[in-house]
Length: 503
Image (cartoon, rainbow, N blue to C red; front, side, top):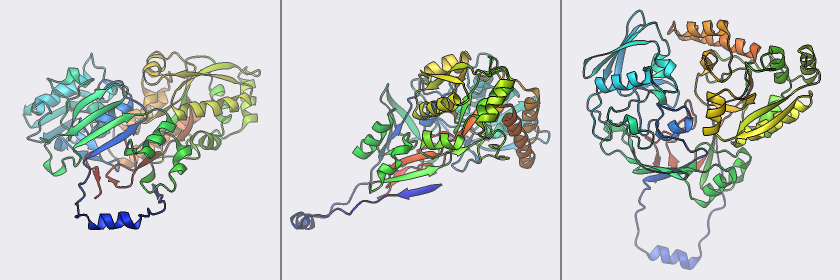
């Protein structure tokens, strides 16, 4: 991570003003206790256990909702509502000791029966949990006493503690779960106050938070939704918002030079920008076509043109932050002539035409336009259809697989397993890949898991079920007196518990 601070010239006061202020009695400055943060995308709902868009968790995870475990700012799993756990030797029984004295914002007591309710809701037959598969190895949930929760598994699941930390695994109350989409109730350090659709979500400090030693320092917090990049910069400079943790205008980062109020932050994320292809639809069912399209793309030029040089090219669905990372950008390097030859071999010597459904976000639109020009050089015509995200994109692409190609930043950490899901919008099927991913869950040994992840990356790099483009960095701009925001993003979030204003 790199942090750059830009300072303007010092303000100069006239002698009369100086004398007036000097004569005035000293007034002790009152520290600010509120913050307003900007977000590019407004969530469609506020319950991360029933829908996939990451914007939901960016408002609610670790602010309103908490889990049995959590992920810290370094990406490590830590205890949360479960203060400790034991794992049986065969890896099939997890016994959690739950924290006493935890209540939901509506007063409901959190205990093992509520935890069982939340987990059964996530894994049940009628579950709409976006990560339902993470709960499928749970055979039974037992509650021997109010502070003890036992998960019996059908088979070892080496990533279980990590998965239980995700927003989709948040603990929800029996009384409030049905209404969490619009009026979320959790156990976290902030309570929900109001959601002005199209504008903002307001939170307030939870005065009854169970963890007194880590109670929120802020009294109130507001998330404002500003989609247009120029408007984001204008709101920052006008002081209408205190920070934009995920600033969507990389070309405007330098515009804060000389601004003594802000700090710019360039951190790591898990946001893998990929152009997914419908592997069940011609011509993308032919590996040679997919390989040709990959070789038609100059990833360095895409990063420069689409995101002002901020980003790292990738060759598989993986980031350098993750265990077992392998740089595979050399598997199908930029080679337009070889791409043309492959298309000829596949029977598309005269090229073909297709549509890319690109979300309205700046990175997707800019990347699609650059790809369009590069594909034209090998005789392939790509027409761009802007598709509203999240609603339209989720409906048409994610759920219905009604598309040729799309482009989106996959923000979930360690989500290489999406290529083993059936169904999933790529419509990619590879038993060998699935077998490797299955082996990952059979061990908790970090070295063994890393080696298996490396093998999985290589399979995807060779098969190219999606065009692997680049990892987006976390570009943040916020007030230089604001402390505690995460510089890096091991999981999509805006964790506010440690945020405060420097006096």
